[in-house]
Amino acid sequence: MKTKQKSVSIDSIIVDARFRKDLGDKSSEKHQTIEALAASIKEHGLLHPLVVRQDEGCYHLLAGERRLVALKQLKWEEVPVHIFPETVDSLESRLIELVENIDRKDLEWQEIAQLQAEIDKLMKEKHGERKRGKSKKDAPDKWSSLDTAELVGVSRSVIDTSKELVKAMEVFPEVKSARTRQLAIGRLNAQKTKTGQAIQQAESPDIERLKTAIKGLYKPVLFEEATAKARIFAELIILPRGIDDELLEKFRTETIFTNGWIVTFSEADATYLHNKKLVVREALWLWQIRSGGEAQKQLLTNHYQRFFYCRKGQPVLAKPGRSAVFSFKEIPRQHRSHNDERPIDLYQEIVSTFAHQTTSVLAPDPLEGNIILGAVNCGIKCVGYGDDDSMIEAFQEKVRIFPPTRYTSFPENLKMEEE
Image 1 (cartoon, rainbow, N blue to C red):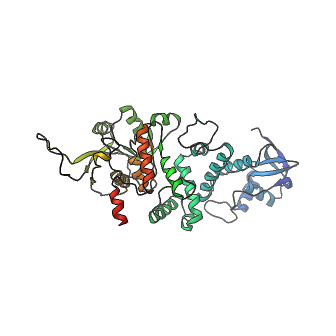
Image 2 (cartoon, rainbow, N blue to C red):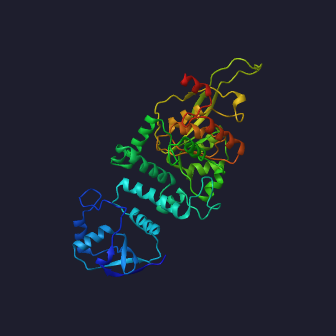
Image 3 (cartoon, one colour):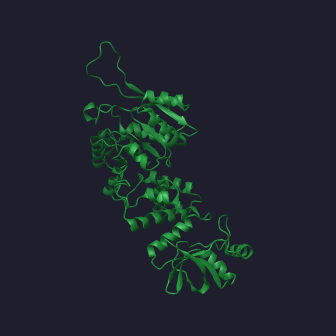
C-alpha cells in the first residue's frame, strides 16, 4: 500500500482509541518519560514521522501517540507524517498500529503478548482462519498462527503462549503482575498443575472443544512435507523407531535447539548421533513379568527394552537425578494398535523427565499418538506428524473415550481411582 509524506497541522491530527494505554508518563527502566522524549526531540529533531490515515481534511493517528504528546508540549504547529489513504479501513488501521508498536523496544512483556494475540486475531478476521491440518498450499488466502509468527519474527510457540498468557491475565492476577514473561509462564503452569488443565488451544474450557484441540496436535502430514513449508523447532524430540540418517541429521543440526534432547528407541540412531559428537546415554524400560504363554526352550525371556537419550549442548533435566530405569507394564497384545506400541504412561514419564513446562516437544513419527497424549497429561504441548490413517484413527479414538489429561494405556487404573 502506497503512502505519502508531508507536514500537516498538529491540530488536524485526531487520536482515536489506542492500543497503548501507558504513554510512559512516569520514569521506568523501559519507558522514557514524555518530558525526556520532548527534550530529545528538541535536541535531535523528530527522527521518525507520525503515521496517520487521511479522512476528509483531518488525519487519524495510527502510530506515534507519545511523539505527538511530546510535540504538543514543545508547541509544534506542524509535524511530518506518513499518510495512508482513506481506503484503509478500521481493521487495517488497527493492524498498522499494532505492527508498528510491536517493533518498539520499550514495551512491557504484557503489552507484547497482547500485541501478538491481537495481531493474530485481527489477521484471522481479515483473511479467515486456516483450519488445523491445512497447509498454505491448501488454503493460500487464509491465515494461521504460523503466519502471525512469521509476520512478527518469532516462533509459532511464542504466539500460542502469548495468546494463552493474555487469557490467563484476565483470570489470574499473579500472572499479570509477573515482572517477566518467563515468570508469568511459570505461574501459569503452576495454576495448570493445581487445576489439572492441559495446554489448551481451544477458545473455551468446553470439553468437546478441548478434545478437538488435542486431536489437532496430530498433523496428518509427513514431517518432511511439513518442514518443506516451514521451519519447525523443538527442545525434545522422541523417536519410537529408527529413521534414516538424513532426517536424523536434520534433527541434530536444524530442528533441535542449541540445548536439547533426542530420545530414541533405536540403537542405530543412537550410534549415529554418538558419532556426531552428541552425548548418548542408555536407559531401560522395565515391565512386569507375566506368567503364562509359551516358553522359549532355547532363550531366556526379556522383560526390558533399552532406549537412549542423546544430549545436544547443555540442557537441564526436569527431573535431575532420576533413575534411568522406567518401570511400566506392557500393553496386552490384544489391546495394541500395532505390535510395538508402548504405553502412554511410559511416554508421560519420559516427557516429564526431560521436558520443562515451557519445552517444545516434537514427535516426527508419532505412530499411534501415545507420545502426544503422554505430553498432554503433563500439561506440555507436543506436536506429531504422520499420514497413516489407521494410526491417526487410533489416536483420535483415545482422545474420544478418555477425559482430557487422564489418558492411559491401562483403563483399569482410572476405574481404581474412581472407586
